Amino acid sequence: MALEIVMSRVRRVLSRGVRRVVPGWRRRRVRGLCSLPALVLCLGLGLSSCGEDVPDVALEAEASAQQQLLDGEPSAALATCRKALAGGAESPGLRLAAATACLDLKRLSDALSHARVGLNDRRTSGPIRADLSWAEGKAALLRYRELSDETDWRRANSSLETASEAGEHRLEAATLLVIMQHTHPRGDAARKARFAALVRELAPDSKEAATVARLMQSEDAGG
Image (cartoon, rainbow, N blue to C red; front, side):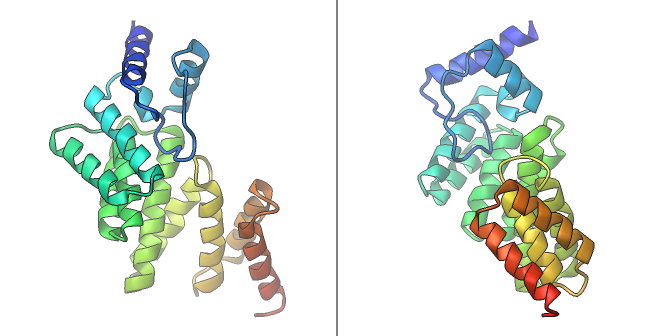
């Protein structure tokens, strides 16, 4: 019965022309998600949009906000999220979209707030937990650079580690962790080496890998 409810909700969202139903996958449009294998995959990943207890209004607002983020319109995405939240809609994916929009708009405290609410949602698990941790960690790191509050640095260090384990932002999270260990007096050499190895594993020919290689070479040279 629960599976039938979820299938019905997914079909209903897709039938309304929503092009994105998977939160956090900002560069991937999902089509034909009504097949049972795809639905089972969603359930296995624990993504909020496939949960049977996520209201339709939250699903639709989440999808609209994600599309607005893809279109480079963070202000519109944040307005969409705020309207839905004010109306009582709530989902981890909606909070992720709001946090991402706030990051793009440099509203760091708001990004932290949205990410924390999403992380505290009982429905949050799997990749979306990692992506919410990315939003929290990145916002905390950017705020640390502005205010030099060590609490923000510690939060960024912890949250970005979670983000490096799954989700869409593993590469960015691992790269930021390497930079953090390199530039902060409390940085840990073992953590730096660990996340540098992860960056090379995830994207060996990327600009992130090149950045990490320079930092590691600088350390070897005593710089």
